[in-house]
Image (cartoon, rainbow, N blue to C red; front, top):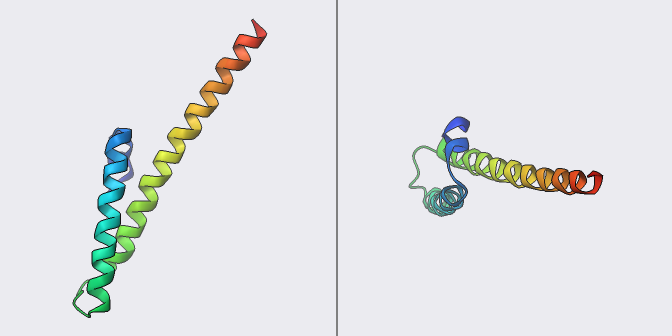
Amino acid sequence: MKIHEIREMKDDELVKQIELQKKEMVDLRFAHQLKQLTNTAKLSVIKKDIAKLKTVMKERELAKVASAKKEIKEGVDA
């Protein structure tokens, strides 16, 4: 999953995608333990995708906090 695709998603879509990726990670780990997983690189790809999704969510949260602080500061200065 590309970062520009993730940034285009809405917040609720990000949450759903994280949950789906986590479920897939559990399934892949289980298959790996049972020696049924042929492409073990999928594990690291899924981990990285989850990290990207969480990073974008955190960036959005920080942007909201920063804009709220800016509005408060502007209200105090006025």
